[in-house]
Amino acid sequence: MAVEANGEKKPTNPKRRRGHKLEKWEVSLVKAMIARGEKSDQDILAYFTRPTRSVNQGRISEIRKGTKHKAVKAASDQDLEDFLAAWPDIDHETGLSVLGDEL
Image (cartoon, rainbow, N blue to C red; front, side):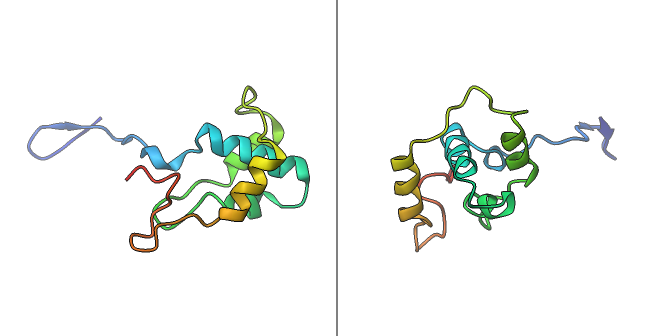
């Protein structure tokens, strides 16, 4: 912990914001995209990042390698097709994702 001028303790590693990690439904879509073999990790990541939310490319790599989210099953082909057909699903007034923005 760092100590501020007023003597108050402040954490040196602030908590990560909720929106910077993939939700389980997103992980299932990532797994389905990986299974198709048509897109690179960077291309897959583009479906889940936006100006209000950045996700590290390493998360896709961890899913591909099986080091994270082993228990999450891949989305069905139909669920993936529905997602891709609706993407980008954003509110055009706010710019926020209809499905994934916590606001």
